[in-house]
Image (cartoon, rainbow, N blue to C red; front, side, top):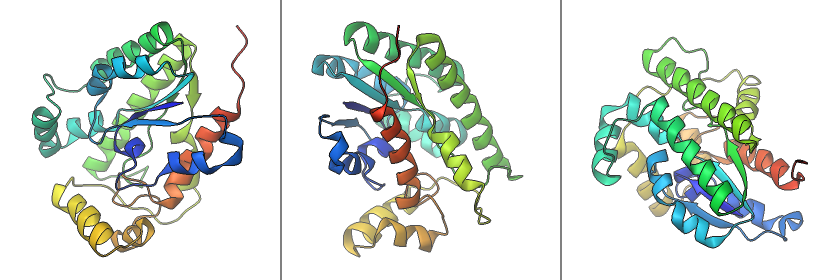
Length: 243
C-alpha cells in the first residue's frame, strides 16, 4: 500500500493517519509505504512515479493538490515552491488535471496497481466565507476536487471522499474560522517551538490557534486526521470493482 502526497501524507507536523491505520488489526495484511513529501505539488508527484512503480504496490492512495492551490493564492508560497520544488510554470487547474492523468495512467499501466484518488480537504474552516482569500481558497478547492472526481470516473479508479466527509463534520459545528494569510514563521513556530521544544500536542496547538479540525488551517489535528483515517479505511475494506 503506497501513499502518495504532500505534508498531510508525510505526517510531519500533522496527524499521523497512516500510523493509525497500521495499528489496526484489520489492516495487518497491508504493508504501508509512506511516500509523502512535505510541500510537494502534483508536478513533483509525477517526478516521483518511477520510485513508486518500482515498488510494485497492490494499491496506491493519492492525496495531492493542496500546494498547487496554495501556490496559486499566496505569492510567498509560490516563491517558495519555485525555488525549493523547482516549479518551472505556474500551477493551474489545467496543469493539475494533466498531472493527475499522468499519475493515474502510469500507476495503472506500469505498476498495475489499484489506485484511489482522494479529494482535498478544505483549507480553513469557513465554507461560506465572504473574506476574499478564504472565498478564493474555497473556489479552488471545489474546482480541484471536481477534477479529481472526474479523473477517478474517467479512469475507473477508486475515489476517497475526504472533502465530503470533512464538510459534513464542518456543518455540525458552529465554530468557524477563515484562513486568510499564509505565514512560514507561524508554521515553524508551531512545529519547532510548540511541538518539538514545548512538547505540546497537535490538539493543544489547534486550541491555541483557534481551529476545530486543523492545527493551523492547513494541517490536521486529531479530529481532522480521523476523518481522513475513516474514509481511507473504507477504501481498504472494499473489494476491487468487478470489470
